[in-house]
Length: 498
Image (cartoon, rainbow, N blue to C red; front, side, top):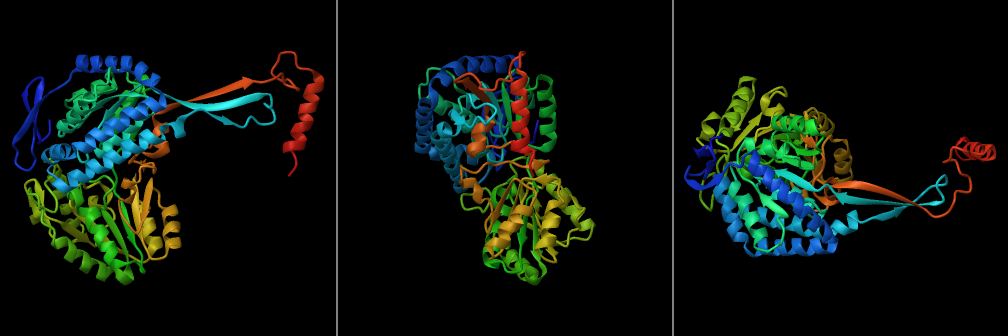
Protein backbone atom coordinates (compact mmCIF):
# COMPACT_ATOMS: atom_id res chain seq x y z
CA UNK A 1 0.00 0.00 0.00
CA UNK A 2 1.42 3.37 -1.01
CA UNK A 3 0.67 6.93 0.05
CA UNK A 4 -1.72 7.36 -2.87
CA UNK A 5 -3.63 4.09 -2.31
CA UNK A 6 -6.50 3.72 0.08
CA UNK A 7 -8.15 0.36 0.57
CA UNK A 8 -11.90 0.46 1.07
CA UNK A 9 -12.10 -3.27 1.85
CA UNK A 10 -10.11 -6.41 1.09
CA UNK A 11 -11.01 -6.46 -2.60
CA UNK A 12 -11.12 -2.80 -3.69
CA UNK A 13 -8.98 0.32 -3.48
CA UNK A 14 -9.35 4.00 -4.23
CA UNK A 15 -7.12 6.02 -6.48
CA UNK A 16 -6.39 9.50 -5.17
CA UNK A 17 -5.56 12.82 -6.77
CA UNK A 18 -2.00 13.51 -5.50
CA UNK A 19 -2.66 17.26 -5.69
CA UNK A 20 -5.54 17.17 -3.22
CA UNK A 21 -5.74 13.70 -1.72
CA UNK A 22 -9.35 13.48 -2.92
CA UNK A 23 -10.57 10.03 -3.98
CA UNK A 24 -11.11 9.76 -7.72
CA UNK A 25 -12.66 6.31 -8.10
CA UNK A 26 -12.78 2.82 -6.62
CA UNK A 27 -11.29 -0.16 -8.44
CA UNK A 28 -11.22 -3.91 -7.80
CA UNK A 29 -8.10 -5.66 -6.61
CA UNK A 30 -7.93 -8.60 -8.99
CA UNK A 31 -6.86 -11.78 -7.24
CA UNK A 32 -5.35 -14.94 -8.63
CA UNK A 33 -8.73 -16.21 -9.84
CA UNK A 34 -9.67 -13.02 -11.65
CA UNK A 35 -6.24 -12.75 -13.24
CA UNK A 36 -6.42 -16.36 -14.35
CA UNK A 37 -9.78 -15.77 -16.01
CA UNK A 38 -8.42 -12.71 -17.88
CA UNK A 39 -5.40 -14.66 -19.11
CA UNK A 40 -7.57 -17.60 -20.21
CA UNK A 41 -9.81 -15.23 -22.17
CA UNK A 42 -6.74 -13.63 -23.73
CA UNK A 43 -5.39 -17.03 -24.75
CA UNK A 44 -8.64 -17.90 -26.46
CA UNK A 45 -8.69 -14.51 -28.20
CA UNK A 46 -5.09 -14.97 -29.34
CA UNK A 47 -6.14 -17.51 -31.97
CA UNK A 48 -8.56 -15.05 -33.54
CA UNK A 49 -6.12 -12.15 -33.31
CA UNK A 50 -3.32 -14.17 -34.93
CA UNK A 51 -5.67 -15.18 -37.73
CA UNK A 52 -6.32 -11.52 -38.59
CA UNK A 53 -2.84 -11.31 -40.07
CA UNK A 54 -0.77 -8.16 -40.31
CA UNK A 55 -3.30 -6.31 -42.45
CA UNK A 56 -6.24 -7.13 -40.21
CA UNK A 57 -4.41 -6.23 -37.02
CA UNK A 58 -3.25 -2.96 -38.58
CA UNK A 59 -6.84 -1.99 -39.32
CA UNK A 60 -7.94 -2.67 -35.76
CA UNK A 61 -4.97 -0.81 -34.25
CA UNK A 62 -5.41 2.21 -36.49
CA UNK A 63 -9.06 2.34 -35.48
CA UNK A 64 -7.95 2.13 -31.83
CA UNK A 65 -5.49 4.95 -32.44
CA UNK A 66 -8.12 7.13 -34.04
CA UNK A 67 -10.59 6.51 -31.23
CA UNK A 68 -7.99 7.61 -28.67
CA UNK A 69 -7.03 10.68 -30.69
CA UNK A 70 -10.65 11.79 -31.05
CA UNK A 71 -11.14 11.56 -27.30
CA UNK A 72 -7.65 12.77 -26.30
CA UNK A 73 -8.82 15.50 -23.87
CA UNK A 74 -10.76 12.91 -21.86
CA UNK A 75 -7.75 10.61 -21.53
CA UNK A 76 -5.45 13.54 -20.75
CA UNK A 77 -7.81 14.58 -17.95
CA UNK A 78 -7.55 11.12 -16.38
CA UNK A 79 -3.75 11.24 -16.60
CA UNK A 80 -3.66 14.70 -15.03
CA UNK A 81 -5.99 13.70 -12.19
CA UNK A 82 -4.11 10.52 -11.30
CA UNK A 83 -0.54 11.83 -11.66
CA UNK A 84 -0.99 15.52 -10.83
CA UNK A 85 0.94 16.61 -13.93
CA UNK A 86 -0.22 19.71 -15.83
CA UNK A 87 -2.88 19.33 -18.52
CA UNK A 88 -0.49 20.17 -21.37
CA UNK A 89 2.00 17.52 -20.23
CA UNK A 90 -0.82 14.97 -20.04
CA UNK A 91 -1.98 15.81 -23.55
CA UNK A 92 1.60 15.52 -24.85
CA UNK A 93 1.74 12.03 -23.36
CA UNK A 94 -1.40 11.08 -25.29
CA UNK A 95 0.14 12.42 -28.51
CA UNK A 96 3.26 10.33 -28.04
CA UNK A 97 1.28 7.20 -27.21
CA UNK A 98 -0.85 7.57 -30.34
CA UNK A 99 2.26 7.95 -32.51
CA UNK A 100 3.59 4.63 -31.23
CA UNK A 101 0.34 2.79 -31.94
CA UNK A 102 0.43 4.16 -35.47
CA UNK A 103 4.06 3.19 -36.09
CA UNK A 104 3.73 -0.31 -34.65
CA UNK A 105 0.59 -0.99 -36.68
CA UNK A 106 2.09 0.23 -39.96
CA UNK A 107 5.51 -1.39 -39.60
CA UNK A 108 4.74 -4.82 -38.14
CA UNK A 109 4.42 -6.63 -41.47
CA UNK A 110 7.59 -5.14 -42.94
CA UNK A 111 9.54 -6.05 -39.81
CA UNK A 112 8.11 -9.46 -38.96
CA UNK A 113 6.98 -11.10 -42.18
CA UNK A 114 8.84 -14.18 -43.31
CA UNK A 115 11.84 -13.43 -45.53
CA UNK A 116 14.33 -15.48 -47.49
CA UNK A 117 17.97 -15.61 -46.34
CA UNK A 118 21.10 -16.95 -47.97
CA UNK A 119 21.72 -20.67 -47.62
CA UNK A 120 25.50 -20.77 -48.02
CA UNK A 121 27.71 -23.19 -49.91
CA UNK A 122 27.21 -26.23 -47.65
CA UNK A 123 23.41 -25.98 -47.95
CA UNK A 124 23.16 -24.88 -51.57
CA UNK A 125 20.25 -27.29 -52.08
CA UNK A 126 18.19 -25.66 -49.31
CA UNK A 127 15.97 -22.61 -49.48
CA UNK A 128 16.15 -20.81 -46.15
CA UNK A 129 13.61 -18.52 -44.51
CA UNK A 130 13.23 -16.69 -41.21
CA UNK A 131 9.99 -15.35 -39.80
CA UNK A 132 8.48 -14.15 -36.54
CA UNK A 133 5.53 -15.52 -34.62
CA UNK A 134 3.68 -14.02 -31.65
CA UNK A 135 4.32 -15.40 -28.18
CA UNK A 136 0.61 -15.67 -27.44
CA UNK A 137 -0.40 -13.72 -24.33
CA UNK A 138 1.75 -10.85 -23.04
CA UNK A 139 1.35 -9.46 -19.54
CA UNK A 140 2.23 -5.75 -19.27
CA UNK A 141 2.92 -4.16 -15.88
CA UNK A 142 2.95 -0.37 -16.21
CA UNK A 143 4.40 2.53 -14.20
CA UNK A 144 2.71 5.61 -12.74
CA UNK A 145 4.96 8.41 -13.98
CA UNK A 146 3.96 8.04 -17.65
CA UNK A 147 0.94 5.76 -17.31
CA UNK A 148 0.03 5.88 -21.01
CA UNK A 149 3.21 6.53 -22.99
CA UNK A 150 5.45 3.99 -21.28
CA UNK A 151 3.19 0.91 -21.24
CA UNK A 152 1.96 1.71 -24.76
CA UNK A 153 5.52 0.98 -25.89
CA UNK A 154 4.77 -2.62 -24.92
CA UNK A 155 1.01 -2.81 -25.52
CA UNK A 156 1.01 -1.46 -29.08
CA UNK A 157 4.04 -3.44 -30.21
CA UNK A 158 2.85 -6.67 -28.61
CA UNK A 159 -0.57 -6.32 -30.25
CA UNK A 160 0.92 -5.44 -33.63
CA UNK A 161 3.13 -8.53 -33.42
CA UNK A 162 0.03 -10.70 -32.99
CA UNK A 163 -0.16 -11.16 -29.23
CA UNK A 164 -3.08 -10.47 -26.97
CA UNK A 165 -2.39 -8.30 -23.92
CA UNK A 166 -3.41 -8.29 -20.27
CA UNK A 167 -2.44 -4.92 -18.81
CA UNK A 168 -1.93 -4.28 -15.11
CA UNK A 169 -1.52 -0.49 -14.64
CA UNK A 170 0.12 0.98 -11.57
CA UNK A 171 -2.14 1.11 -8.54
CA UNK A 172 -1.63 4.88 -8.62
CA UNK A 173 -3.03 5.21 -12.16
CA UNK A 174 -5.68 2.50 -12.64
CA UNK A 175 -8.03 4.91 -14.40
CA UNK A 176 -5.68 5.26 -17.37
CA UNK A 177 -5.58 1.50 -17.92
CA UNK A 178 -9.34 1.20 -17.47
CA UNK A 179 -9.94 4.03 -19.95
CA UNK A 180 -7.79 2.32 -22.57
CA UNK A 181 -9.56 -1.02 -22.14
CA UNK A 182 -12.97 0.63 -22.41
CA UNK A 183 -11.90 2.46 -25.55
CA UNK A 184 -10.76 -0.83 -27.10
CA UNK A 185 -14.06 -2.45 -26.16
CA UNK A 186 -15.92 0.43 -27.84
CA UNK A 187 -14.52 -0.80 -31.16
CA UNK A 188 -16.73 -3.89 -30.75
CA UNK A 189 -13.92 -6.37 -31.34
CA UNK A 190 -15.48 -9.85 -31.07
CA UNK A 191 -12.75 -11.19 -28.75
CA UNK A 192 -10.94 -9.75 -25.66
CA UNK A 193 -7.66 -8.96 -27.38
CA UNK A 194 -6.77 -6.20 -24.89
CA UNK A 195 -7.83 -6.31 -21.23
CA UNK A 196 -6.97 -4.29 -18.14
CA UNK A 197 -6.85 -5.74 -14.64
CA UNK A 198 -6.49 -3.42 -11.65
CA UNK A 199 -4.97 -4.03 -8.25
CA UNK A 200 -1.87 -3.76 -6.12
CA UNK A 201 1.42 -5.64 -6.03
CA UNK A 202 -0.37 -8.93 -5.37
CA UNK A 203 -2.22 -8.53 -8.66
CA UNK A 204 1.06 -7.97 -10.48
CA UNK A 205 2.49 -11.10 -8.88
CA UNK A 206 -0.58 -13.07 -9.91
CA UNK A 207 -0.13 -11.89 -13.51
CA UNK A 208 3.52 -12.95 -13.56
CA UNK A 209 2.55 -16.37 -12.18
CA UNK A 210 -0.50 -16.78 -14.41
CA UNK A 211 1.17 -18.59 -17.29
CA UNK A 212 1.41 -15.66 -19.69
CA UNK A 213 3.95 -16.16 -22.44
CA UNK A 214 5.96 -12.99 -21.76
CA UNK A 215 6.06 -10.17 -19.21
CA UNK A 216 6.85 -6.54 -20.00
CA UNK A 217 7.69 -4.70 -16.79
CA UNK A 218 8.48 -1.08 -16.03
CA UNK A 219 9.43 -0.06 -12.50
CA UNK A 220 12.23 -0.02 -9.97
CA UNK A 221 15.30 -2.22 -10.23
CA UNK A 222 14.47 -3.85 -6.90
CA UNK A 223 10.98 -4.82 -8.05
CA UNK A 224 12.30 -5.97 -11.42
CA UNK A 225 14.59 -8.44 -9.65
CA UNK A 226 11.59 -9.90 -7.81
CA UNK A 227 9.62 -10.14 -11.05
CA UNK A 228 12.59 -11.78 -12.75
CA UNK A 229 12.93 -14.34 -9.96
CA UNK A 230 9.26 -15.25 -10.32
CA UNK A 231 9.57 -15.47 -14.10
CA UNK A 232 12.56 -17.79 -13.69
CA UNK A 233 10.38 -20.43 -12.02
CA UNK A 234 8.50 -20.98 -15.26
CA UNK A 235 11.12 -19.68 -17.72
CA UNK A 236 8.75 -16.87 -18.67
CA UNK A 237 10.71 -14.35 -20.76
CA UNK A 238 10.87 -10.79 -19.50
CA UNK A 239 11.62 -7.33 -20.86
CA UNK A 240 12.45 -4.90 -18.07
CA UNK A 241 12.83 -1.11 -18.04
CA UNK A 242 14.04 -0.08 -14.62
CA UNK A 243 14.86 3.61 -14.65
CA UNK A 244 18.14 5.44 -14.76
CA UNK A 245 20.49 8.11 -13.52
CA UNK A 246 20.96 9.90 -16.82
CA UNK A 247 23.83 12.31 -17.30
CA UNK A 248 24.02 15.44 -19.42
CA UNK A 249 27.50 16.33 -20.72
CA UNK A 250 28.19 19.96 -21.63
CA UNK A 251 31.35 20.55 -23.65
CA UNK A 252 33.31 23.81 -23.66
CA UNK A 253 31.96 24.80 -27.08
CA UNK A 254 28.32 24.02 -26.32
CA UNK A 255 25.46 26.40 -27.04
CA UNK A 256 24.86 27.28 -23.39
CA UNK A 257 21.43 28.82 -23.93
CA UNK A 258 20.18 25.65 -25.62
CA UNK A 259 21.83 23.41 -23.04
CA UNK A 260 20.18 25.34 -20.20
CA UNK A 261 16.75 25.14 -21.81
CA UNK A 262 17.02 21.40 -22.33
CA UNK A 263 18.52 20.86 -18.87
CA UNK A 264 15.58 22.68 -17.30
CA UNK A 265 13.08 20.54 -19.18
CA UNK A 266 14.98 17.28 -18.69
CA UNK A 267 15.58 17.77 -14.97
CA UNK A 268 12.35 19.45 -13.87
CA UNK A 269 9.70 18.31 -16.35
CA UNK A 270 7.07 16.04 -14.77
CA UNK A 271 8.55 17.08 -11.40
CA UNK A 272 11.70 15.14 -12.31
CA UNK A 273 9.73 11.90 -12.37
CA UNK A 274 11.16 10.72 -15.68
CA UNK A 275 13.24 7.55 -15.96
CA UNK A 276 15.34 9.07 -18.76
CA UNK A 277 15.29 12.58 -17.33
CA UNK A 278 18.42 14.57 -16.49
CA UNK A 279 19.72 13.84 -12.98
CA UNK A 280 23.45 14.55 -13.34
CA UNK A 281 25.06 17.35 -15.36
CA UNK A 282 28.80 17.43 -16.01
CA UNK A 283 29.98 20.74 -17.40
CA UNK A 284 33.43 21.51 -18.83
CA UNK A 285 35.36 23.94 -16.62
CA UNK A 286 35.60 26.86 -19.12
CA UNK A 287 31.79 27.25 -19.27
CA UNK A 288 30.82 25.89 -15.87
CA UNK A 289 30.18 29.17 -14.07
CA UNK A 290 28.13 30.57 -16.94
CA UNK A 291 26.07 27.41 -17.22
CA UNK A 292 25.32 27.33 -13.47
CA UNK A 293 24.36 31.02 -13.46
CA UNK A 294 22.01 30.71 -16.44
CA UNK A 295 20.59 27.39 -15.26
CA UNK A 296 19.91 28.89 -11.85
CA UNK A 297 17.96 31.76 -13.41
CA UNK A 298 15.91 29.39 -15.58
CA UNK A 299 15.07 27.01 -12.76
CA UNK A 300 14.15 29.73 -10.28
CA UNK A 301 11.43 30.86 -12.67
CA UNK A 302 9.60 27.52 -12.34
CA UNK A 303 6.57 27.33 -10.08
CA UNK A 304 5.33 23.91 -9.00
CA UNK A 305 1.68 23.51 -8.08
CA UNK A 306 -1.65 21.94 -8.84
CA UNK A 307 -3.05 24.50 -11.27
CA UNK A 308 -3.27 24.53 -15.05
CA UNK A 309 -0.48 27.10 -15.23
CA UNK A 310 1.93 25.31 -12.86
CA UNK A 311 5.35 24.38 -14.23
CA UNK A 312 4.98 20.88 -12.83
CA UNK A 313 2.88 19.03 -10.29
CA UNK A 314 3.41 17.08 -7.07
CA UNK A 315 5.20 13.86 -6.35
CA UNK A 316 2.71 11.30 -7.68
CA UNK A 317 4.03 8.79 -5.15
CA UNK A 318 3.99 10.56 -1.80
CA UNK A 319 6.88 8.67 -0.23
CA UNK A 320 9.12 9.86 -3.07
CA UNK A 321 9.50 13.15 -1.20
CA UNK A 322 11.45 11.38 1.53
CA UNK A 323 13.78 9.81 -1.02
CA UNK A 324 14.47 13.26 -2.44
CA UNK A 325 15.02 14.64 1.07
CA UNK A 326 17.48 11.87 1.89
CA UNK A 327 19.55 12.53 -1.21
CA UNK A 328 19.69 16.27 -0.57
CA UNK A 329 20.76 15.63 3.02
CA UNK A 330 23.47 13.21 1.88
CA UNK A 331 24.80 15.62 -0.75
CA UNK A 332 24.99 18.52 1.72
CA UNK A 333 26.51 16.38 4.46
CA UNK A 334 29.31 15.34 2.09
CA UNK A 335 30.22 18.89 1.12
CA UNK A 336 27.82 19.64 -1.71
CA UNK A 337 26.17 23.05 -2.06
CA UNK A 338 22.56 23.94 -2.82
CA UNK A 339 22.66 26.88 -5.21
CA UNK A 340 18.91 26.70 -5.72
CA UNK A 341 16.57 25.45 -3.03
CA UNK A 342 17.56 22.83 -0.49
CA UNK A 343 15.85 21.01 2.33
CA UNK A 344 13.38 23.88 2.69
CA UNK A 345 12.20 23.16 -0.88
CA UNK A 346 10.05 20.26 0.29
CA UNK A 347 6.44 21.16 1.00
CA UNK A 348 4.53 17.94 1.42
CA UNK A 349 3.91 16.43 -2.02
CA UNK A 350 5.30 19.54 -3.72
CA UNK A 351 9.02 20.15 -4.12
CA UNK A 352 10.53 23.40 -5.35
CA UNK A 353 13.44 23.01 -7.80
CA UNK A 354 16.79 22.09 -6.28
CA UNK A 355 20.21 22.49 -7.92
CA UNK A 356 23.17 20.94 -6.12
CA UNK A 357 26.81 21.58 -7.01
CA UNK A 358 30.20 20.22 -5.92
CA UNK A 359 28.58 16.95 -4.93
CA UNK A 360 31.00 14.05 -4.31
CA UNK A 361 30.55 11.18 -6.72
CA UNK A 362 29.83 8.74 -3.90
CA UNK A 363 26.78 10.67 -2.70
CA UNK A 364 23.40 9.01 -3.18
CA UNK A 365 22.42 12.15 -5.11
CA UNK A 366 24.88 10.86 -7.75
CA UNK A 367 24.58 7.10 -7.37
CA UNK A 368 20.84 6.51 -6.84
CA UNK A 369 17.86 7.41 -8.98
CA UNK A 370 16.18 10.53 -7.57
CA UNK A 371 12.84 10.82 -9.38
CA UNK A 372 12.29 14.35 -8.20
CA UNK A 373 12.99 17.97 -9.24
CA UNK A 374 16.57 17.80 -8.02
CA UNK A 375 19.69 17.82 -10.18
CA UNK A 376 23.43 17.78 -9.55
CA UNK A 377 25.71 20.04 -11.62
CA UNK A 378 29.41 19.19 -11.25
CA UNK A 379 32.47 20.68 -12.91
CA UNK A 380 34.76 18.48 -15.02
CA UNK A 381 38.00 19.12 -16.82
CA UNK A 382 36.70 18.26 -20.28
CA UNK A 383 34.36 15.98 -22.20
CA UNK A 384 36.54 12.93 -21.60
CA UNK A 385 36.24 13.30 -17.85
CA UNK A 386 32.50 13.85 -18.23
CA UNK A 387 32.21 10.56 -20.12
CA UNK A 388 34.22 8.77 -17.45
CA UNK A 389 31.97 10.05 -14.68
CA UNK A 390 28.79 9.36 -16.62
CA UNK A 391 29.87 5.76 -17.20
CA UNK A 392 30.66 5.20 -13.52
CA UNK A 393 26.96 4.70 -12.77
CA UNK A 394 25.38 1.27 -12.31
CA UNK A 395 22.51 2.55 -14.46
CA UNK A 396 22.69 2.73 -18.23
CA UNK A 397 19.45 4.08 -19.63
CA UNK A 398 20.24 7.33 -21.43
CA UNK A 399 22.51 10.36 -21.67
CA UNK A 400 22.86 13.61 -23.60
CA UNK A 401 25.82 15.48 -25.04
CA UNK A 402 25.96 19.18 -25.85
CA UNK A 403 28.61 20.38 -28.28
CA UNK A 404 28.58 22.40 -31.48
CA UNK A 405 30.83 19.85 -33.16
CA UNK A 406 28.52 17.06 -34.31
CA UNK A 407 31.44 14.69 -34.95
CA UNK A 408 32.63 15.16 -31.35
CA UNK A 409 29.09 14.61 -30.13
CA UNK A 410 28.70 11.36 -32.01
CA UNK A 411 32.09 10.08 -30.86
CA UNK A 412 31.14 10.87 -27.27
CA UNK A 413 27.80 9.11 -27.74
CA UNK A 414 29.61 5.96 -28.86
CA UNK A 415 31.68 5.96 -25.67
CA UNK A 416 28.72 6.29 -23.32
CA UNK A 417 27.54 3.03 -21.76
CA UNK A 418 23.78 3.35 -22.11
CA UNK A 419 20.88 2.49 -24.35
CA UNK A 420 20.12 5.88 -25.88
CA UNK A 421 22.07 9.11 -26.35
CA UNK A 422 20.80 12.44 -27.63
CA UNK A 423 23.15 15.09 -29.00
CA UNK A 424 22.10 18.71 -28.42
CA UNK A 425 18.71 17.72 -27.00
CA UNK A 426 17.19 15.62 -24.25
CA UNK A 427 14.42 13.05 -24.57
CA UNK A 428 14.37 13.67 -28.32
CA UNK A 429 14.07 9.94 -28.97
CA UNK A 430 10.65 9.79 -27.29
CA UNK A 431 8.98 11.16 -30.40
CA UNK A 432 10.81 8.81 -32.79
CA UNK A 433 8.87 5.52 -32.77
CA UNK A 434 11.43 3.83 -35.02
CA UNK A 435 14.11 4.06 -32.31
CA UNK A 436 14.31 1.16 -29.85
CA UNK A 437 14.36 2.14 -26.19
CA UNK A 438 15.89 0.34 -23.22
CA UNK A 439 18.95 0.25 -21.05
CA UNK A 440 21.86 -1.71 -19.66
CA UNK A 441 22.98 -2.62 -16.16
CA UNK A 442 20.46 -1.74 -13.45
CA UNK A 443 18.35 0.03 -16.08
CA UNK A 444 17.16 -3.35 -17.32
CA UNK A 445 17.29 -5.30 -20.57
CA UNK A 446 15.34 -5.85 -23.75
CA UNK A 447 13.88 -3.13 -25.97
CA UNK A 448 10.54 -1.53 -26.67
CA UNK A 449 9.72 0.71 -29.68
CA UNK A 450 11.00 0.37 -33.21
CA UNK A 451 11.67 -2.82 -35.13
CA UNK A 452 13.50 -4.23 -32.11
CA UNK A 453 10.39 -3.59 -30.04
CA UNK A 454 8.25 -5.56 -32.48
CA UNK A 455 10.76 -8.42 -32.44
CA UNK A 456 10.85 -8.25 -28.62
CA UNK A 457 7.29 -9.56 -28.62
CA UNK A 458 7.89 -12.24 -31.22
CA UNK A 459 9.54 -15.64 -31.37
CA UNK A 460 11.86 -16.46 -34.26
CA UNK A 461 10.95 -19.32 -36.55
CA UNK A 462 13.53 -20.61 -39.02
CA UNK A 463 12.61 -22.76 -42.02
CA UNK A 464 14.49 -24.69 -44.67
CA UNK A 465 12.98 -26.32 -47.75
CA UNK A 466 15.15 -28.77 -49.68
CA UNK A 467 14.92 -28.02 -53.40
CA UNK A 468 17.03 -30.85 -54.73
CA UNK A 469 19.32 -33.63 -53.50
CA UNK A 470 22.65 -32.38 -52.20
CA UNK A 471 25.43 -32.92 -54.79
CA UNK A 472 27.80 -33.74 -51.91
CA UNK A 473 25.62 -35.28 -49.23
CA UNK A 474 27.12 -35.28 -45.74
CA UNK A 475 23.79 -35.52 -43.88
CA UNK A 476 23.64 -39.27 -44.03
CA UNK A 477 24.83 -42.25 -42.06
CA UNK A 478 26.25 -43.62 -45.33
CA UNK A 479 28.72 -40.90 -46.25
CA UNK A 480 30.88 -41.71 -49.22
CA UNK A 481 34.66 -41.42 -48.80
CA UNK A 482 34.82 -39.42 -52.03
CA UNK A 483 32.40 -36.84 -50.67
CA UNK A 484 34.38 -36.47 -47.48
CA UNK A 485 37.60 -35.95 -49.43
CA UNK A 486 35.96 -33.30 -51.60
CA UNK A 487 34.57 -31.58 -48.52
CA UNK A 488 37.91 -31.50 -46.74
CA UNK A 489 39.53 -30.07 -49.87
CA UNK A 490 36.82 -27.41 -50.13
CA UNK A 491 37.31 -26.56 -46.46
CA UNK A 492 41.03 -26.05 -46.98
CA UNK A 493 40.61 -24.00 -50.16
CA UNK A 494 37.71 -21.90 -48.86
CA UNK A 495 38.76 -21.20 -45.28
CA UNK A 496 42.30 -22.43 -44.74
CA UNK A 497 44.16 -19.76 -46.65
CA UNK A 498 45.19 -16.49 -44.99
